[in-house]
Amino acid sequence: MWKIEDADELYGIELWGNGYFSINRLGHLTVRPLRSHQEVDLCEVMAHIKKRKIRTPVLLRFPQILEDRVAYINTCFSNSISEFQYDGRYHLAFPFKVNQRREVIETILRAGRKYNVGLEVGSKAEMLAALTLSQNREQLLICNGFKDEEYLRMAFYAAAVGKNVVIVIDEVSEAHRIVKLNEEMGFCPTLGLRIKLYMRGSGKWADTGGEYAKFGLSAPEILACINTLKTHNLLSKLKFLHFHIGSQITEIKRIQEAVREAARMYAKLIKIGVSIQFFDVGGGLGVDYDGSRTSSEASMNYTEQEYANNVVYTLKDICDLEDVPYPTIISESGRAVTAYHALLITDVLGSVPGELSPTDFPLNGEEPHVISELRDCLQDINVKNYVEYYHDALQQKDEMITLFRLGQITLEDRAKGEVLFREICRKVLRFAKANEDTSEEFEVLFKLLSQKYITNFSIFQSTPDVWGIRQLFPIVPIQNLNKVPERHCTIADVTCDSHGVINKFIDLKDIKEVLELHKIEDDGAYYIAVLLIGAYQETIGDIHNLFGTTNEVVIIVDDKGEWHITKTIRGDTLADVLSMMRYPQGEIADSLASCISGAVQSGLLREDMAEKMRTDLMQMLESYTYLSPKEE
Ligand code: PLP
Image: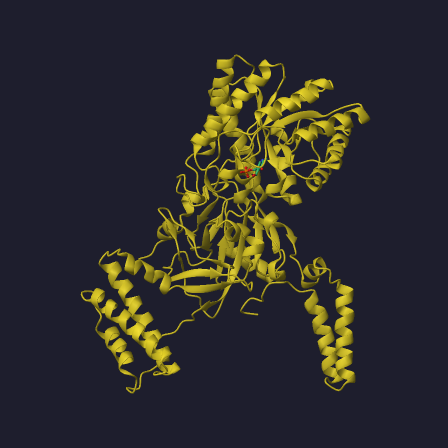
């Protein structure tokens, strides 16, 4: 008998869920925003959302998870600071680019006020957005990225209005531009250096670090910047040292080695008279997407506490050896703060191939020999002979295709043959399972027999990293978790792009090529959730095929365990995405109207039909870019 525990094991929920996700006794996926027993039943949420006519795909945002992440990462660092008696402080600076949505950043700043959580920005637009947010004088505003005069001027203005600005010099010429602005304005914000480390990260983002990295100053460039600042009496402003060896670092030893190298750099700078006070380890704290706790690309072989321990201990060790003061530690952890808080729910619209069985294609006894051979094979195959019979069936299938190519069998015969072959494969899989036979030749049958579940979302909009860098995210049905998922599926999105498929799924030991899902019934929606998508996906997502942003719902849970929707944000309409491509709504309306009038005048269209078309098309312009659910 299939149990909820089986579903938990199959989808790995407890392993990657980090306490935020679970299954309730109804077999529904739940979210526990506070990692406590207060949980949100996602099926209940979807029923409610449907009543409010909010269509799928819908992004669910849980701000309490963000708050919990901010608190947790700070707690890990404060544990390490007391354990290793590090006589210094730690602050998180949230990197804007990981999720620029206003409600996300505001929640992080609000939750982080008591820990003095700051912000890191990497462009002029991010800088201006940050200027509109409320930060106290302790909360840092770190300016990274390549900077022209305008960007630097914004940073100076931000400092002038009381923001705690740090300009991190990413390139030698920036130092000269800073000197000029200092002369013009008569003051200069705190300055920092982004250093290039020899040590690289690990995993998909390893190239961010190392000698060939895009960013970071080499040793001669560091000295050149110091000389420029010294010549213009600005050396006292240089207080900040920063490095970043890549996102999602999968191995703890890379972090340790990077901190060791950067800490030496810090000590040497102190010794040549640069009074660095902040040591910024950048991002890189990973998320265990597959729950395996290994150094695989979708995982990390350490915990958040271990990360904090390694940073604090290694830095302290070098400071002691070099006899230099302990700097304030900064981390720019983005992924680890935001990944868990957002998930996408959408519905399966249909499957390819559909549910066909041999009874849909009855045999009449007049089929060619090769088809009757397949029929006999299906009748006689059993747990003892399945290997031999499967090999025979493979041969017959090849022969059938050859005969079809030669024009010797009909389309109907080929259809009967294909359905029979699929049924034989189904039986083979069942017998192989009963015999605990894990031969590779049968493993591939899962893929062969898999169905594509056509799912109402765009990979390019909602999970662009699946397409761009083959990232894995957990995917789980939100209902029926108390029933056996008897279908093996890949997921096809609704874009007209053959790359809009998901055919790699998380697995504890390996990567799966098919995902176990339930049979979709004609009545009622079948929802799946794509989880842990709160980092980078929303900001990198694009409007490929003009599928726009999705509907969004913000949910919190109260002390009594009741959940509430605190905010709903409608996704893009057809008019919205068209206007982004410079088809203003007014112009579309005018040209549609003149098209219809032209058709009436030339007698192609009746006036009553024309009127209905005008009204319908205007309404359609205001509609959602995704498909209608199947029950509508
Ligand atoms: N800081 C800098 C300079 C970055 O480039 C990045 C992202 O790559 C981050 C912080 C955030 O990294 P993560 O999301 O891995 O914490």
